[in-house]
Length: 209
Image (cartoon, rainbow, N blue to C red; front, side):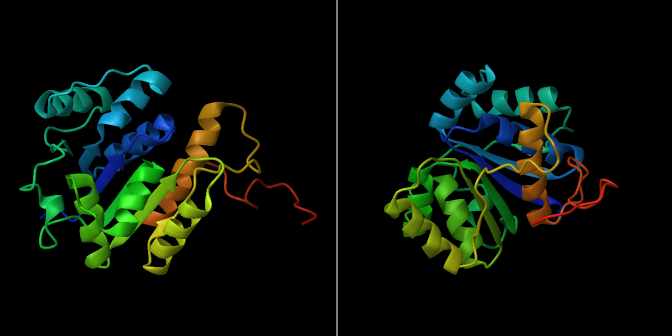
C-alpha cells in the first residue's frame, strides 16, 4: 500500500478556499487523497469559490484530477455510503485525516462517534486506530456546546486547528491568509512546505512581545 495516503474531508462550514489550497498542496506533494465531500460542502464551494463539482463520484474524480493536475487515481472520491472504501476500515484506512473546513455538526457527530456516513466513520476509524486526525473548525462565536465537543476530542488526541490565520508574515492578500492556515495544517501532518515565511526568519530584528 502506498504510504503517502491521506483522507481529506470537506464539510459545509464556510472556508472553501482552505480546502482547495490544502488539496492543491497534497496533490503537489504526491499524496494519494481519499476525498470525502458532504452535500453542504458542494453548496459552499459553489457559493465561496464559484465552483460546481459534479455530483456523480466518478465524474467528480475525473474533474478534480484535471483541475489539480493529479495523476489518474491520485484523488479518490467515494460516496457517503460507500462502506467498501478503504477509509471505512481500520485495516486499510490512511493513518492521517483532515476535516477542512469542519462544520460544528460534523464535529459533534465525530465527538459522539455516530458514524452515520462514510465521513464520520472515517474519522472514527482514525481515532480508534490512534492515527492523526486534524479538525479545522470555521465558526464564530463558538458556543459552550462547540467548545465542549472540541475539548472532548482534544482529550482523545485530536488536533483542533481553527482557521485563524496570523499576520506576522504581513499578508497582502486573502490568499496569503489562506496559505498561512494551510501551512499550519501541513506542519501538523508533518509535510514540509514553504507557503509562508516562518516567524523569525525574515532577516529582520524582532523586538517586543
